[in-house]
Length: 396
Image (cartoon, rainbow, N blue to C red; front, side):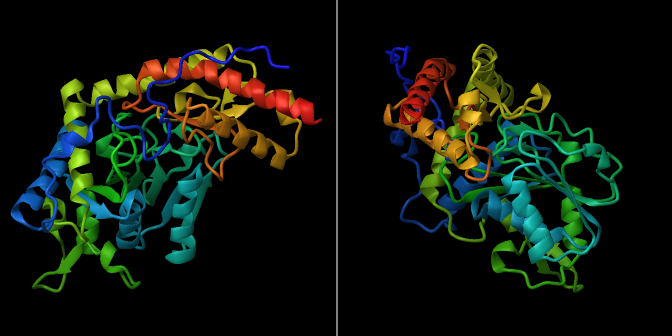
């Protein structure tokens, strides 16, 4: 028998998916009227819109002027893999893996590229590996924020300013919500469908001068797919970075409607105060959840340590003994029922944990989510939990 009454209010925008994320407040398709449709993306107007996306990305994120920014096919995955396939090989490689996408990059490097001198620094979901083991002589591949684990690195202090290797940072759920230490990062990637609520298919690749130097001084020994090629042979037989990629000439055909949608999100970000306001909004959202978790006995953050807890992809685990005493499969089924009930009631859409992560919920708290919607969500989480627990007891 349940005791909690069904909440009277629902979030005005129940989209809590971790990608694609909620659209920015006030979004309307009418804002995309300037989209260059029915034209080549290489026409003057098309290239201008792509270049505007690059320039406004630099402005909002505070990317250094001597870093290159390019739009890549294949979302964040395409941007990361272009860097892995193009740059790794001349030095030992360390991979930091504490969630599913970091583990994907391990698979790429170990099983596909088959680089021999590789060290994997891994940790269970909810934790970080020992970052003191990161070596300055090795290339480093890591996620800044684990979208599927709710864990982030607190800063880039573990990366040496005098490093010899390059750092490749998958920052797809950290960009526009967390401060990135650009001086420590040589490759940064993200996708439009994450923090600003853009649409899928496009990744962004940001290269430091050190990354450009690696591209121009090293030729990988394996065949290079066209989608990953970022250099051309120069007259001396060496490599030269294809600068047109970083000036709006994408490797394959982008959706100009998605480009315009991203531009709309960037304009909104600039209008409300830029990166620091985006960070503040995300911090406020996760703060609401933190207050609720502190007084709620059945739930905890998957990331127990506050300093490494994400302010975007917030992962929650059920700790009630009535659930933790079940088999692993039964716990997973419980979490699915919880997320399904929230969706059925229109309280939270796409709030289930990632398929490879421990069973639980994942609530996106990035800047496009309104704090008022997170506040309205928490009573629904309590109500839904009690409903599913009651069903469990009735079936016993």
